Length: 327
Image 1 (cartoon, rainbow, N blue to C red):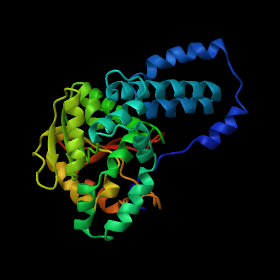
Image 2: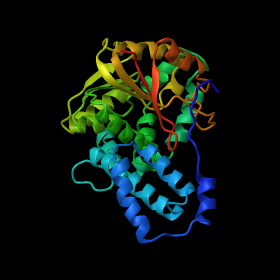
Image 3: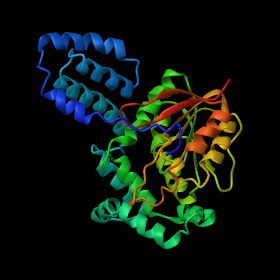
Image 4: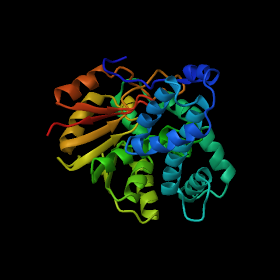
């Protein structure tokens, strides 16, 4: 693993043990929770949860109380995410996203769409192994530009079917609003869910991706909702210089042939003092051979050489970090 890499910190074992040790405190705990809400309301979700767990370790909050508060706070993130992505007339996020895919692909069989989504990870693996020459930039770029299965894989993921990590986009939104950011670039935008979320909340949005087919779908999704954005096909276009004060790169760098070089492009696109919100980490995953980079040492070295400073890190949930460009 590369130097400086941050991995999410697990707490399941400690939490399980304290469940057996900490007694419920009833009304006193409720009073403390009310005071606590005012103290931590400006903190980002991972920091709130980390602070709450420290209260468990000090025996001022029960493990059951922590679990309830974690569920409530994650529920708020989930409602924000769901509210941004739901199509009119739908109440369930996963069903809405499946209907959206069906509309775009002109498929009238919801069962087929669901099946393609559920099997997308395995299908992508087979397609990658059949079409991509290891280390060959052209075949990698051609794969992403032409592949359709990725639409199904990302939409299924964004429906929170497998895990809640897409909710990191909501944490990113909260960070951007706290820092007064207005001009947003989603680098490696995929199907555009992050752009939809931040556009719904008033940011000026630009989506950039190397895949023309995925970018077309993202554009269709935003236009269907009446949302305005700019779009950059990274094969043929370039990012504008010093145009953005907030950039996200969500689970992108492990897919890039040269993530360190991508940092140069992102640095140039950021305004002085602008922020890069990213997860720069990946473990070997036999089900996802398209994760071609696991050593991010050169990437962190490039960030340091460019003068970026890490100003925040998620030490609890998903391992994202925020880096600020020098002013």
